[in-house]
Length: 252
Image 1 (cartoon, rainbow, N blue to C red):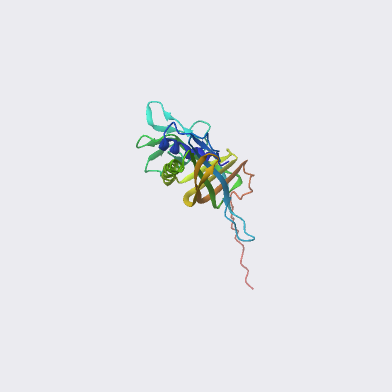
Image 2: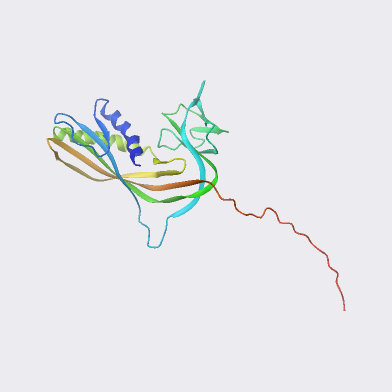
């Protein structure tokens, strides 16, 4: 379920290193002796521990839709929700991972977004519909990342790692939410307000290849949303009818 994080960061690495550079996701392994390779591995997501006896805070769940929008034919700055999307706009990302502020980058008119300038890459949207069964749970959490480079010599491996690290951190600086794989529309997971911090550097030999590794930790708030369909009907008082009745007064 951490693969979307790797997929979000890999294009920035590839752009920084060039199309001919071997860039991979996952833990990776050393290439052939005369080759170089870079691998980004999102290894672990860990929620922060809670005090004994306490449970994560839970809020109500809502039906929603999320997906990538397409521009309206002949109107490249306008993006409309598809027919299957229910509810109203809750969030717009452009590029993916960067939440745009309403009124700063676009205006909403019904089911259509009107951008002020051409969007940078894909436009992703989330909607919010009526309340449903389930819950939304939030708690602090962190993701552990390892960025590795291999080369025939240590200097080249170090250079590859430095350039890769600069590209990854530059992208993370512009991102304010990380979406993980779920099972839409039932289950969603994301890490908001990500804050990366360097844990350490490592270098050595892997067979005949030199390697360099940067270990990183990304802190943020983990949101887990479980939506289980229409909520159970609740018995509610629709109206209160108050009638006043006059009674006689008797004197002794």
